[in-house]
Image (cartoon, rainbow, N blue to C red; front, top):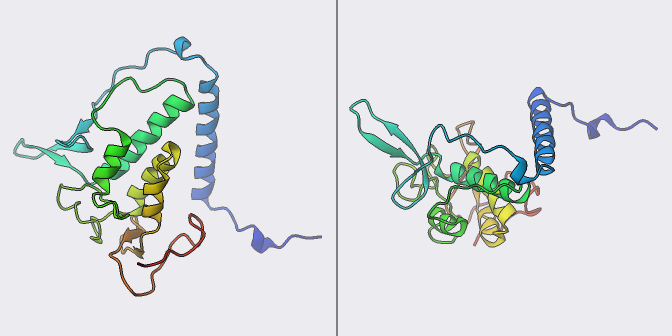
Length: 205
């Protein structure tokens, strides 16, 4: 009996590369996890330290042409997500916890990124122009959301995760963002995941 070819869509180059990269990363994590932490070599010092703003959130620090050092919060949510994913992997898979402590815990970070605990997350809660979560250019988008979703899932923050995933979204005109948050509305909303994450369309309250 021949299978229906529509059940197996052609694999794209991007999907192939992504799948191969994920498989390689998992194999490396597995091989590393079998090595006792005491037997591993001491990691080299950081080539560049992690920069934090006055509230303790991760930011990019750059220097303006006139020599002024400025905090950039455009990728704060994304950087926080990857930071906590990395910490979870080091603690639970590699058995080699990150040795550098910081002021904020993950719950404290989430409270800053979701100030009203209403499912609306910010790229950065205070630094403009990234402190408007609904802006089409600088609002909270899927590239910021992805690592943050992974981090919340790994660390068990399901309440915050569900609030985030039940928020309405709208398609962005910027390709790298794909989707951005939108304010509550009585109109029909577009849910990009087609039942993938919550397996239902969110209710608009």
